[in-house]
Every structure is written in C-alpha cells, then in structure tokens.
Length: 496
Image 1 (tube, rainbow, N blue to C red):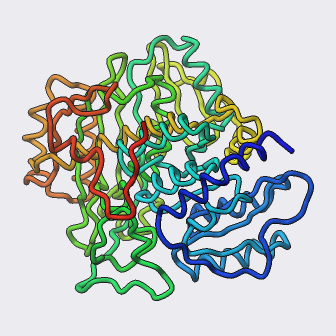
Image 2: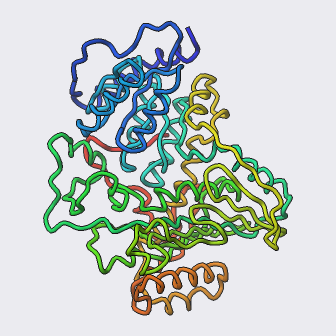
Image 3: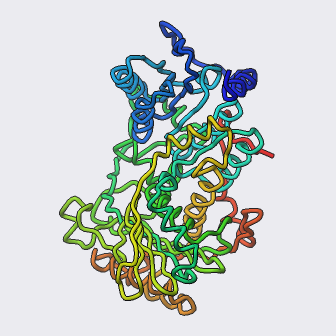
C-alpha cells in the first residue's frame, strides 16, 4: 500500500464526519462503484465545478494514466451529465455525477479534489475537502476574499494537505528562468513592476426583471456562502465574475495571473503595506450593463523596495474599436497587453504571455529570451505522491498572497469616491509613477469618449495594512470587506 493510500484511509472517518455535519446529502444511485479494481494505485479524483476551467481539468486528468476520474460534481445537472458523457467517451470509464459535492468528499476512494467553481465557493470547497482528508487543486484566485485565503493556507498546513493554486504560470520554465535572472542581480535592482490586463470585455447587458434560473440548476446551492439575491444579468454562468457578490472583476479573474508574475519577480512574501485604487466601471454608458466590478483600474501596491502597479483595461483602444469584437484592438504598455514589465536599473524584462520572458537593456536591445511551459496539474500530482509541499510550484500561500493583492486593490475601490480626472491628478504629485499610470488611463478613457472631466472615476483611499495580521490599520469599512457575512450552512470555518 502506498504512503498516499495509507494517508487517505486514515482520514476516512474524518471525511464522513465532515460531510455528515453539513446536513443531508442527496444520494444519486450509480450502477457500480466508480472506483476500478486496478492494482496500480491510481489516484481517485473528484472535479467540482465542470463548466469552464473545470472542463479543462477533466480534459487534462482524462489524459493521465495514473489518475482516475471518479466524480463530476456540478450544481447544474445539464452541464454535469454532459461532462460525464464526455469523460466516458474519452476514457472508457464513466464517473459518477453528483449535484452535491459533499457525497464525493465522504467517499474514501477520492484522494484529490479539483475545483473551478465561481470564486465565492473556492474557500468552502477547499477547506471541506481538506477536512475530509483530500488534497486540493483550487483555481485562481485562491479565495473570494483575503480572510478566506488565509483560512485555506492554515487548513493545508494544520491538516498536512497538499494544496495547489491554479496560477499555472508558476510551472512555466521560461518565466521561472526570467525570475532567476532578475533575482541574480544581472539587471541591477528592480525599480518598479507593471502588470497589465488589457483585455476587452463587452458589457454584459441588463434585464428589466430578475433572471429565471433553469430548473436543472440548484440555485440555492449555487449561491452557497454568498447572499441569495435576484440577478439582473442575462447570463448566469461566467458573468458572475463581474459581480462583487460572487466574483472579483478582471483583476481577480485574468489579472491574478499577471499580478502573481509581478509579485514573483518582485519577491515580497507578504501583502503590501499600502495600497490605493483608481478606476471604475467606465465606458458602458451607451450600453446596458449589470456588472459592478471595475473594468478600468489602477491598483498601486506601495512595497518598500519597489512599487507594484497593476493596470486593468476592459475597453478597447478607442470608441471606434467598440464597433468590433473588442479583443483585437487593445492598448499595450511597452509590449505588454496581458503581461508584465519588470523595470530594473540596467534594463527590463517583458513577460508577454504564459511561457516566455525577454530581457532588454534600457535602449530596447534584446539581451536574452527564455521559453518553456509546464504541466501545472502534473506538478500537483507529483506533490500528492511525494507528500512534500516543497514540490509544489504554486502552494496555497503563494496563491493567497497574489490573490490578496487583487482583493486589497478592489477594497480601496469599494470604499472610494467619484471625482474628476483633474481632481484625482492633483492628489498624485508625490507619486510620479502612479501619476504616469493615471495619465495613461485618462488618455485611454478619452479615446473611448468617457467624460473624465466629470466625477466619473473612483479614487480609493490609501489603505495602510499590517502585513502580519493582514488587516488595515485605520479603516473599519475596508476591514469589513476583508471577509463577508456567510449564510447559515455555508459558513467558512476559522482555522487555528
């Protein structure tokens, strides 16, 4: 019997108790146990949330010989059963579909759980999985808010679980080589880092009456820890990203990858001691839109060694470009659209994608280029088998810190006030890099015919944080947004 198998069997009783404590479980009968009788110690997997990125998990796992897909879990029965059919056609074995993932957690045959639910479910799925003795691969951002992320980190450590965050670029050999080069001092000290998420996003529309959720979806379970509210967007799935109740906007969706690269190069192992946000949900005035997360934003993290500046732009390059598909005509910052620029004393590094990095001197001459991807899921599986968290390229702690930078930037926005561009610019005289970033934003908004001379842009306050306690030192409203009120039955537990 493998070390992994002994460890999982030890936690069987814990898993059953954890599931029972959560209330009744809907049992869906299967013709046979999903576990095969193969003697080769395959790892049993349950995938929770199977529509988008979860479907990618299913595809990747289906191609691995040392794992077996036992459960597909999704509150949308139509999606869940479709994914079961697809797995069966690829592998010749049919996993069990369950609407209530707690049933999978109670099964000792399940060794690992991957989850790609909406963000508001990440913490509960991860913690309940680990409490049931499972190892976890949780998509980015690690959690919906800062406090939840810290509980996941504590759960992984206290329960001795392997927990990987889906910041896949951490497994990229090309990007990692660039990090090593910069940290070696080859370009001198880092002066600043700019991450960019210039990704055109059309408005999501708005309904005049609440959306009717389909009968094949359990909306009560879909809401889970988040308040159950009427939705006025036309599409339930995916567009939850642009609702703070369930998502984190594009900085916490796409931008978390680039935020993580930026922090990886810069090196801090804590949340920033000071943060400010400037931006808003802008340029959608001619459309119907039900979102409330910023589509245009600067988050400035004032680390003592060098600032980390993150820029999000959901509008295309101009008003004229809005007549197209919005994706093909976007701004760039020094060659970076969805990427990172690391400016050092003697040159800079551009990370334009998920698998490469290029170093330039300050005249723009190429010094060196690195290329190479990686298999993030395979890295997780290797660590599950070794039982060594040091083998992970993206352990929960790394996911928490990079996700937390997205969250604290969003909090500054949420407690801010609307001002004109001129009024905001007047407050930035002592911060030349931030002022330059804001100037670029204003030019971008003017190109999209946004009325920046009116109080349309939200200026957040500077928020000072104690990185040790991960709380703000002098802003009660901001501190309240580090966590949330949870619905009965879906409370994220505090882990000692």
